[in-house]
Length: 269
Image (cartoon, rainbow, N blue to C red):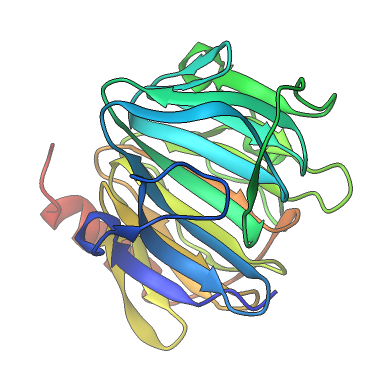
């Protein structure tokens, strides 16, 4: 895995480019967020114009994860509105793509995508449509393996877990006022896109940190120490981890200073 290291990228400020992978009807655009030059894979925001129509059923030569942020995407008989998620392994029938009013979606491809005409059914291990708003919040240990207990106030909705690699697509939610003093490091890549609220990342490595707000994105390689974490208004992040999210903690004598500064100074929303 050689995906780019990205911190605090304002995703909607990234200039869109034409997205024209082989086999997909023209008109889609892509805001690329992080690429893997070795495999051609990428994470990005795909934007479909009003009236987009693939014209026929599709499958993709590589696995695809897609989460709708705005608008609506019809994939065969499955409708994905805001908060809708699908996972398709390579070659899984996805149906005809249609978006009468347009849509924006967060996508993850681990290799360069190529689409093919297909009228077949989704693969047995596909998740063709999942409404994340209909799901309950659960224990964060469903998506992570921390070296110390979490403070109360953090929850997850697990959308998909790869049974072999343990790669996880999930929503992570923080209650207003939640914080964690420890500095974290992980043995796997993590990617986060902020859907709602705020979350302070006090320091990243030896550098000053930042606050994620709606539209902020990061792609962080394994082993980079970061923290502490805090949210004043509460937060929901869409997360993709390239394996089980182990969390090793270390101490930072400035943690509470950084946390208090955020909770006092970040605006209420």
